[in-house]
Length: 236
Image 1 (tube, rainbow, N blue to C red):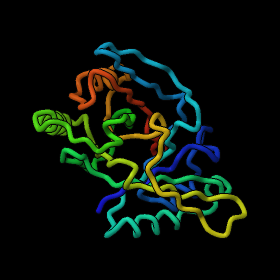
Image 2 (cartoon, rainbow, N blue to C red):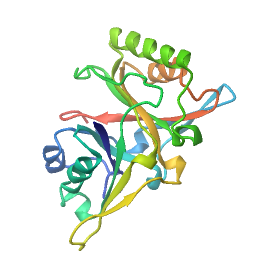
Image 3 (cartoon, rainbow, N blue to C red):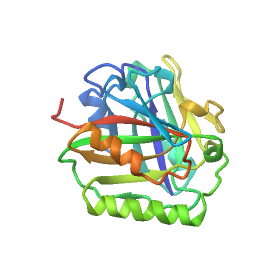
């Protein structure tokens, strides 16, 4: 089974220089995001796009994530419980989500290192995603074809959907607590949740925006995506 372990924002994650080297070294599977001041959101309403510049409220944000392959949900929670206690000075919240698209859209990870500016495109959740409603087969076919073409073009490097938070949990580390608390989903703060992600690389910000506008999202004509720069070792 594949799970995404999401490190929610907080504990200094919105400051330049996050993650500290010791956190990046301790979680080698982690993909970390630059502060949201370097990101933006794209809103589509009735088919018309608008752009909202960061920064954004911290309680709505993702600071990073790791995709792990484990035999069970219990194993994923055990992996999350092993998170470095030094992160955020011991005050951190993780979200453990089952990966996979309800309509069986194929996840992918090319393993290629970005050569251009890497963007993580976070699809914000909605009521349909939280109900695990599967898009029509023709929509899934368009998504799979678009993903394959973007991989072939060297634009898309990875992508994966997430199942509803009814199958997820949050692992909360608090200063002074002997062990983290586990809170089972579902979670009601839909605007804080994500339904999937893509990792793309583009030469310009406009190209990233154009990629988003051309994507056959299953939730059109109304959706929100957040674009955040991926923090890479050795790159400011």
